Image (cartoon, rainbow, N blue to C red; front, side, top):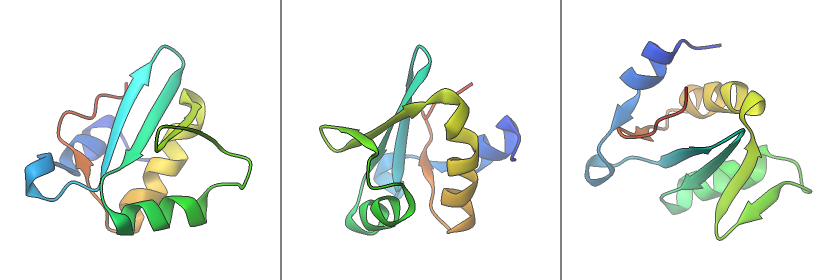
Length: 85
């Protein structure tokens, strides 16, 4: 699992081509794909019964780190203000 520093290093401004936005809300994370390629990757890499809210995948915080690893391994970037810690 990547460290917080590694996750921060894999961030760019949304205007610079970020692929995902991640927002923490208590013990949940809303993970929003920001382009078609990211959306396709996310849909194909989560279970069919995943919870979605207005285009964002909603998951428990404990499941975010391994999913973030997969996203980064696939070559995607997070928005620079993605604040999951």
